[in-house]
Length: 201
Image (cartoon, one colour):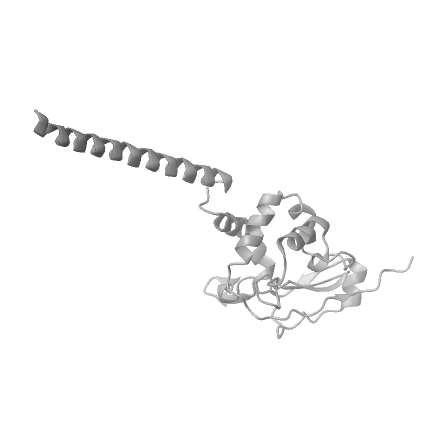
């Protein structure tokens, strides 16, 4: 009978190992599930941020356009790099537009309106974009509608919908910032906004 004891011990060890592996697997599944809930069903903060940037319409203004078979479409080779420096400003009577309260754009990266001319910012992690920004600066910019997230700088200009974007949670804004730090860095110095003088009272 004694010669079977080592076999029984071996079998017991195998069973214990299998149980431990099963528990480890279940623990990993629970952890993965918790992360999934934390990022609203996405595998990571970056993936969640990508979703928020996409459905939030950031590409509408911050990505230059090109003409494809179906008309104007985002040029994803320049994704979120802002208004191209060489692109022209729409040739319009700005004084007449300001008087009538009209606004116009050519590819949605530059807008001319009663406030003046605004250019979509470079959101890529290049030094000409938000590469040197801190997460807190990004959140401050959105929460307060302040250019470059610098206290005391000018307000963000139309058509940036910061008044609604500011209602996002800190976690949502952090996810967006995390994603923007992972996209290709594109060197593009966006022109300085041209502001009209406020109307006389």
